[in-house]
Length: 242
Ligand SMILES: [Zn+2]
Ligand SMILES: [Zn+2]
Image 1 (tube, rainbow, N blue to C red):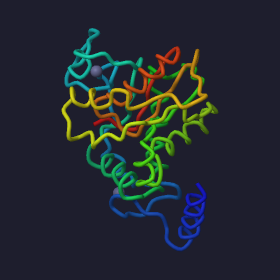
Image 2: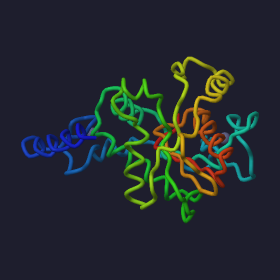
Image 3: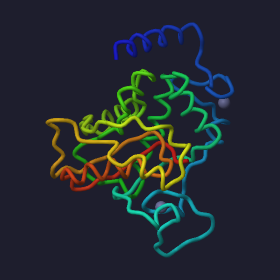
Image 4: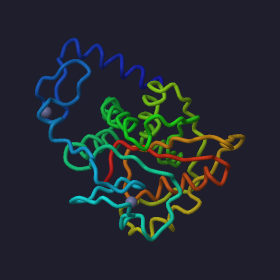
């Protein structure tokens, strides 16, 4: 985090010399803004109708309760996973630059997207005892230099005054998820996580955080471990959904 603090100082200094610009199109923007209005308007928010469990959006009007194709043939262990934006176009680009191109300042923008999840009816007014970021395997975290879920979860913790705790650890280094189909993903993730030593989640209501939900397999596997360890409930929030 020292490196991050230095980075922030440099950024603050450089913003005095160079006015802030849009991350996507380089148009001038206000202080602490990362997208211009045009680019912001191109971002796709996930709006109803969507699956109540995994936030998969649907075309057309669906009024009855249903489970989507993503959820119907498997057990998901989280109570609900709220995703705010579609991981397409600008959102996908921003998250990619943040994670893989070390544009760490973009955590502010991704965290802002994540925090909007708290307004969702599935989370609003609900009490949480603890915020838990989905962990990376230590080897991957070393390669990347940070855990993106932890960085954005910190903003949420500040805003809500709910404590953030790295209760989980990732014990298996799994290959890149996109190379697998859904069944293989579930298999691949089984027992990839565990509770850290001396950590206790008994009787806690958990808010689990990740940057992007793809199939929900990662969040579900984390939720399974947390519930086995005695958590009362596990809701998940992500900035985006594939
Ligand atoms: Zn722009
Ligand atoms: Zn679903």
